[in-house]
Image (cartoon, rainbow, N blue to C red; front, side):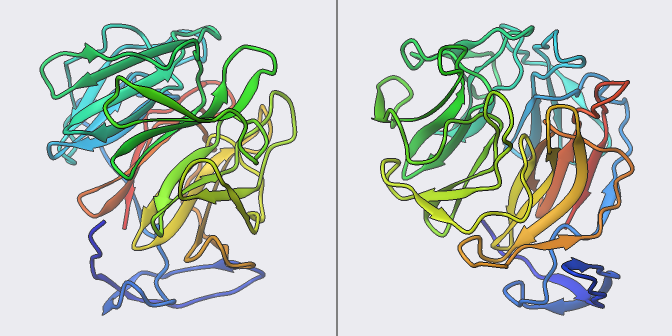
Length: 329
């Protein structure tokens, strides 16, 4: 990820581990411990409004556009829409999925957008595997007999890695790890990693390692734990987050890990923002003042044009979802 200079003079007001950044401008080293990520947020006006963003979709940066893929507006009926934006207020639809899908994963791999597994809606699970370069969707061999949603997928060491998820089998959640270098030939790296089975966790690559954070079992508890691995087989526990969370937004910005919103139990999404410069260090998590007026979970997040973008989400109340598009630096 490209480091970029952020201009701030930071005024820190500390109460416990809450910090406020007043956002004045002054260039500082992005590696400085004074840099606070995701502390300046702008609600993006949209024209026309992407009315079907919803929740449980996936978002990627591809060919200088944000792609928002699938999702649901009511936790039952999934959508097949693909919405694209160059970062301005305008969104266009097109190149829709061949099927409805939500709680899936999407990444850019081998020069294409890949969509991995998910739900057709109403609790169903699929092992669909799609890819696109913008002119329709093709399919690759899915992981055999491993339908799931709420899993995590990352690109690491030139492979796709799929971790955990809700399989609908017994037990309901899994802690298996799969990998493929071509999208066709999948290898079961481990059937049972050292972390507990889960869905709704998030995975990312940082410090040349795969990391997973949070998630939940088929019933409480909700997890605050963090694990990392360099091979998908051996997982090392890091100090836990000071909060438990499932289905949050997680992004890496200027070498900081940022966790936004998510669920603390099945009916309680939140709107807080936390970050750490080093998830392996005890006591390193800090809370950023949140500008959001709505709680949300199952939103998508990504880095695009040197900004953090957070899109849509489930509110936990009526209406079930929102169509907000926020960006921050």
